[in-house]
Length: 106
Ligand SMILES: [Zn+2]
Image (tube, rainbow, N blue to C red; front, top):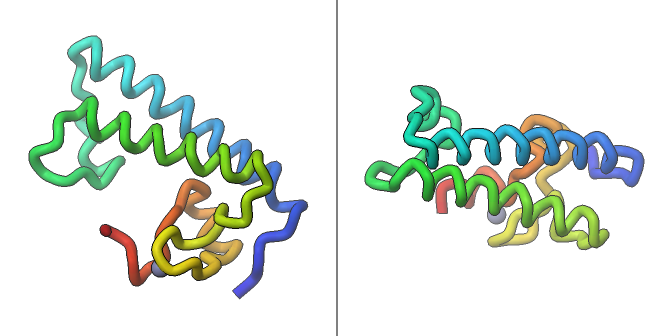
C-alpha cells in the first residue's frame, strides 16, 4: 500500500475543499426546505436521521479532516479507531475518510 507523501496533500486538500463546498450548498438547500433526492445515497445516511443532521455530520467530518491535514497531524489518512494507514489510493477516492475498511460504519 502506497503511503501518503507531502506532495499528495495539496490535491487531497483541494478535494476536501470541494467536498465541503458541495455539502455546505446541500445544507443550505435542505435548510431552505428542498430535499435533494440523492441525499441518502450520497451520504450513506442512517435511517431516521433528519436530512440537515445528515449533511451537518458529513460537513463536520470533512472540516475536521481538513483541520488535521492543515495542522500536519498524522491522524489524517489514518483510521480513527485503530490508527491503520488508509493508503494513497483510498485517500484519493475518499479524501475525508476516517475509518479503515474494518471499522467503517462505526
Ligand atoms: Zn480501523
